[in-house]
Image (tube, rainbow, N blue to C red; front, side, top):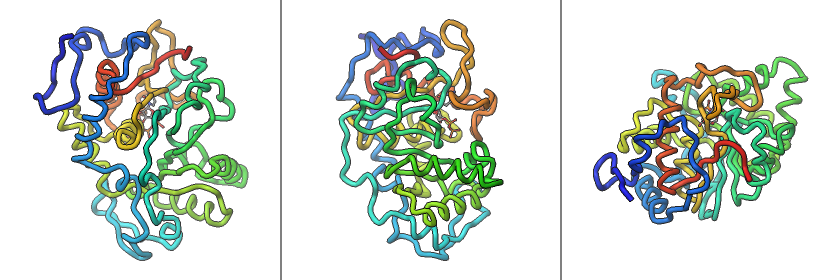
Length: 319
Ligand code: CDP
């Protein structure tokens, strides 16, 4: 079939000619999809030139000590000190060391998941990644419950847990953390200065309440490395979203990657409204701190990869 290589023959990010014609909001076709192992391996190899998920997933204990000064990745002029609590929670070895999974699910937070019935399919994957402590209990049928890694941007503490203003919110966060039950909690602590206290509150809670999670704090170079990889492939993202970060990391240790809940558009194919998040009332236009156009751009790139069989995007109902 006809293919267009978008930035020279060395790039593994290849667009099917049909994707130039189909508008990117169109739902990716699930029926025709076939896994392209050769391409998936090529992408893994290419990404390894920029970053190594095994290392970059977390700073390790041996590399920092309490009191060390860190410049924030996005606010270079601001610094933080490595606290005793943060140091205590740094892993000694990478939580992904030597890991390889046959299939992984990355669950984005789009409202497209509502009424999808995808819960069972998601839970059947060997490794399930979720974003920003998104709730699962009330949405099991559509999103499943299995969680092997969950991210937590510090801003989630403000947005979803009211900055822990009282015991009710503290208890809510505590419940959510307890429910993680040994999975990896991935906290980008060194990105932006605004999250300092929130990261500290969570660290303290984990230690004080002996919460069973494996904490990980992404390396200082991860974001720039991920951005560099995508820029090389002519995907001009300003700041990669959590979902794209997770996909980029997952290529290292997942043989087949399945994405759910990726749909940064306010309407579905049939023009029905789609909530920005499946679980809250956040509005479109918010789009995290990234440029408003980044998520649709990322989606377009992911859809091109779907069409090539490098990953599978599920948008809509599961069988
Ligand atoms: O941390 P961030 O604000 O990027 O993410 P989020 O709103 O918690 O959602 C997790 C991920 O799901 C995003 O990073 C996107 O990759 C994806 N997402 C999407 O594709 N469409 C949406 N309407 C919402 C989220």
